[in-house]
Length: 158
Image 1 (tube, rainbow, N blue to C red):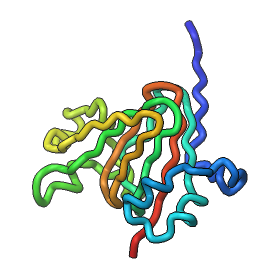
Image 2 (image 1 turned 30 degrees about the vertical axis):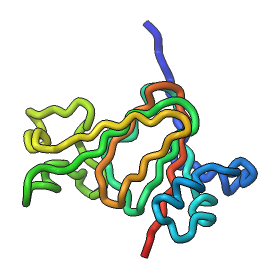
Image 3 (image 1 turned 180 degrees about the vertical axis):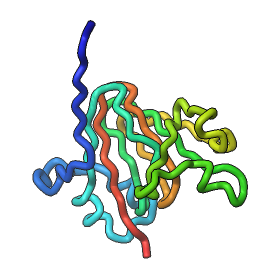
């Protein structure tokens, strides 16, 4: 029997430590997303590095997000909650962490979370050099399909 230890770098502010690595990353995508201060956003980019199988559980962000895939591939599920009044309830937010869900979006236990059956899940596979705009408040889940490096550029347009 093998024991595997997974290492995952999540939300690291790498570009504050090594600004020279930022050259060219995200500029065009942030422009397309109408970021009003892309230089600041790029300097505050959060790096995600991990092996295949690394999961970021279902959650939503409090900012606009341009997720840029640098190395490898990542599966991203975008979720739209249930029907009408039950939208938020269908995503089963964690108590005390309103922007995180108790549901495994990729393999939901519908016995424990029956309202999740009404959730629409849109599948996106990001490959190196691609980006995905995830609007503020949109529930999403990610799993690395291979060793992976990504950058999230979070920003607010007010």
